[in-house]
Length: 80
Image (cartoon, rainbow, N blue to C red; front, side, top):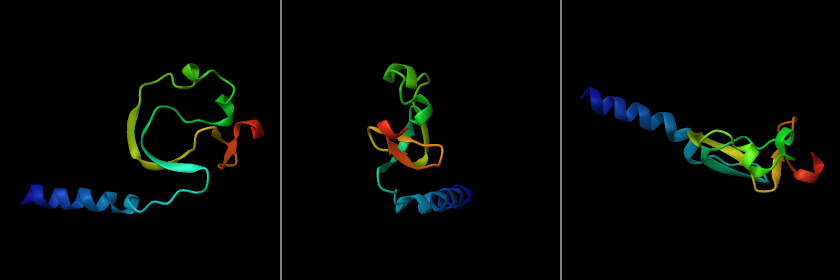
């Protein structure tokens, strides 16, 4: 019975993420190699991701060629 209750609780914890909508220029991810931001926009790609991919709670991430600005929005690389 405890296992059943724990399973239900864990399922309910992930419900808010099922219908997550991302703003324009972003997409939903469940694994993350590195946080693309304007701070690293001009680094070669192999220098941006120096740690292995880690599973994360589903979250919005900038689309390809877009980078996270300090204001929190995804902007094209040339606007960094």
